[in-house]
Structure formats: C-alpha cells, structure tokens
Length: 368
Image (cartoon, rainbow, N blue to C red):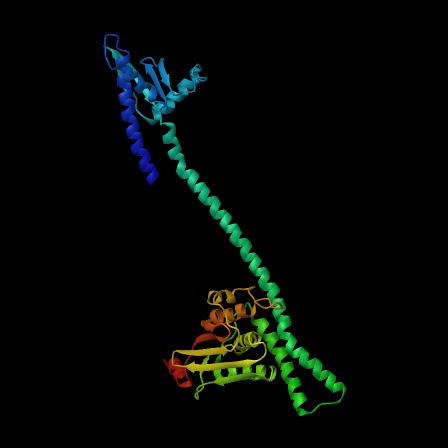
C-alpha cells in the first residue's frame, strides 16, 4: 500500500515533468522565437531518458518520439498499440505549435516507476519462497525429531525391561540350584508385576490415560522402595512427606515412571554413591515434589535442553526419559517439571508441581 502511495506521488511528478518538457518542445519548434536559453532547453530535452513519449498531430500521425524502441518505431501497428496503452493510462498533454495547429503528447510511466510498481510483487515472492523454505526445513526437522523419538522409545523400552529381566534371570539360576525361600518368591512376583507395569506405561503413550484421585505420597513411596532395593548400598534415598495424605488426580503408572526416571538419572549423576532426597509438600491448591541429588550437576544453559528428545550426556542413553517425563507431567497431568537449581559437583534439584488438595478439600470441590 505504501509503495502504491509512492507510485501515485511519482506519477504526479512525472506529469509535471512532461508538461515542462512539452513547453520546451514547443519553444524549440517556434521558428520566430529567439531565446538565449536554447542550450538549456536542449539539455532538458536530452535529460529525459526514462519517460516514453510519443507526439502525434490531429490526424494521429507520428511527429516525434522519445525513449521508444527504435527498431519498432517503423512498425505502424506497434506505434498504434503503444498509443492505445498510453491513452488508456494518462490523458495527453495538448501542444499548440502554430495558431490552430494542435499536437498531442502521450507518455507512459518511466522505467523507474515501473520497477517500483513490480517491487512489492518481487518482495512478496521472495518472502513466500523464504516461508516455503522455512516450512520445509521445519517439517524435515520435525520428522527427524519424531524418528529420534521412536528410536529412543525403543531403546527406553529395552532399558525399562532390563532391570526386572536381570532379576528374573538371577532368580531363575537360583531356582535351578534350588536355593529359594519366601523372600525370593516375593521378589519374583514383584519383577513380574514390574514387567506388567512397564507394559501398561508404554500402552498409555499416545492416548489419554485415566486419572483417578490417588494418594501421591504413597505412589512416590512405592517408586522409591523399588529404586532403593535395586540401587547400591552406597546410595542413601530419603523421603520426606506430610502426615496428611495428599490426594490428587493422578495416573499412578505414568507418574511412577517419572519418579523412577529422575531417580535413575540421579544415580547416574552420582556414579552409584551419594544421597537422593525426595520431598513432598502440599497445599489446597498444589502439590510440590522436589527431587535432589548430590551428583555432578547440570549447567544452567542446559536447564531447558535436557527435556528435548534426543538430548543425553550418557554414552548409552537415547535422551528420552526426561522428554517423556515432561510430556507425562505437562500434557497428561497439566502440571510443570523443571530444574529448580543445580551446582557443579554439588547436585541438582528437579521440581514437579501438580494441582492438588487433601481428601477433605476435594470432597468440598465435588460437592460444589
């Protein structure tokens, strides 16, 4: 729109130039006029190198032309067609050469004005090409990320199944040696249940799981007990929770996955020796879970990057655990998960925030 505004202003200026040019043309063709400014007039005539001009008499016979393709001037059809174009665009400037003899000056937009007219089209075309290139680049990046997710999901499945399968293999060997007791059978049942839980977790990915009202404190305790029995004796896992049960809408299977992922990352960061502290705090509005370790820490510039699919600092990892954890918390539970703080060689604290309430508070909400 602004370019069109400029074009209109320039066309008015060009009209004024043509009127001046026409007057000088008249003076140069006046045989009786003796003007000392003749050289100046000639320079003005010669300086018009951009505006096409055709002058015809009353019978539409060609008298003069300027800035027209000289190879086509001899063709009457071309001159006639060019005149029609000029006549359709601008009214002619009337030139009186002699008394009673009239000539008509037709003109068209200058080459500069035409370039300005097409400039928005060229600019928009470049923008469209840029948007298309950006779209294809984004689409390719998205597909590559999806491929990484699927590959990572396969590796994560193998990783999740690894712990219970290793236990089952060990128990199998002990059974072959007929070394078993009630504790062994209990552990066998736990690992079988664990395999069932893992199957349930992966079956829920991509669909909206049921989120019943659940005691989150007990869910965290169960997850930590599983990790505690399968981690090194040099790891101290502590859990602080309020005395009152914290009841929130929760998918127990998926949320346990988040706690275990964070604890396993903490174990890797501590190289199998250190302290993990899990603290549950609640109010009528939200439940806050802080998971701290004494590991090597995370650089502040990586606080958001670690949640992206494919990012990992481990040689055997595929960087999917934290990405899935973020999806479980934010997409399925409408909560938040982020790095609260981290210091090199001192440890990291992850924070999870979920909407919550006590049993009493929830019953009040449902009553209302």
